[in-house]
Amino acid sequence: MLTTSLALALTAGLGIAPPTQSTTTATTTTTATQSKAAAPAATGTIVDTAVAAGSFKTLVAAVQAAGLVETLSGKGPFTVFAPTDEAFAKLPAGTLEMLLKPENKAKLAAILTYHVVPGSVMAADVVKLKNAGTAQGQRVDIKVDGKKVMVDGANVVKTDIACTNGVIHVIDSVILPSDKTIVEIAAANGSFNTLVAAVKAAGLVETLSGKGPFTVLAPTDEAFAKLPAGTLDTLLKPENKQQLVDILTYHVVPAAAYADQVVTMSQVPTVLKTPIKVTVKDGKVMLGAATVVATDIEASNGVIHVVDTVILPTPANKAQASVDTNSSKN
Image (cartoon, rainbow, N blue to C red; front, side):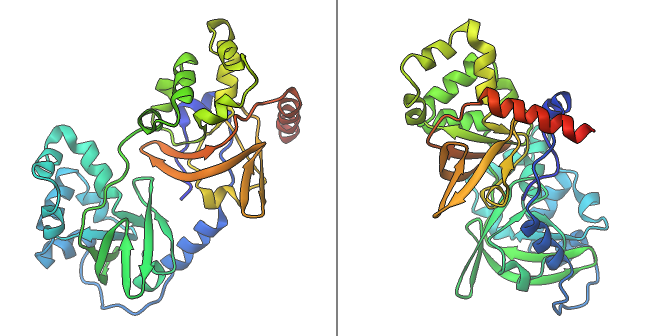
């Protein structure tokens, strides 16, 4: 889901517009929300229903500890993928106790809202989806295998428990969002050593570790190795920091744009304010001169798509971006 919360701290100062949202996701959400699939009459809110069921005691305690009772008792509608007490018991020893501590309230809230999808999505609609945007901001993956439905690896064991403010689907495992930032994921991966070194040299670690969300078009070490001899060494020199910043921010979209959304765009906006052309042909997706070789690596503050070439802004496309910006103001 293309989250509506943009990287305000960064983009407000730069005046960057968000990318065009994929109509596929919006249409699916609307259809699901308006589903008229038959369900038993609702008698209570999501929280009331979970309390009355007796099999969600841990979930209810977690919702209370995270300060989400009022939210999940509100108008909604919401779809909650609700882990049972047995599902929470499957977490590593000590995990639940750690999460319930007051100092970990934000982390607990992030995990719980990762189980919440805005809108009332009945089971008949869930099975038509490949993914769904959550209230936490990241997507959950949905897989249907025969009669088996999985949400991020958790089995859906009961569906369509109607509530006055939405619906509950029961799952047998707690699903966890990514808790590492884009920079942390890149550093740990081992394929982006040059990118991480460049981000440090450009002074962008704090920015790309911030709230976001961002989409980073991440060149591999092999991509940087394709640059003309001496180019990288020159860019890493302190006197060329601004040029390096320009190149790196040309690889950053100021929003979370997933692969299925990118392919519907003719171009993607960047933090540099210079858009990159999107070309889809023969099963390949190209961003400028770079081929996308891996997609949708989720981070706590956005998403990474891997590219095989460093995308360089040119005076020509920077000038065109300036013309387009000025035209839009007139």
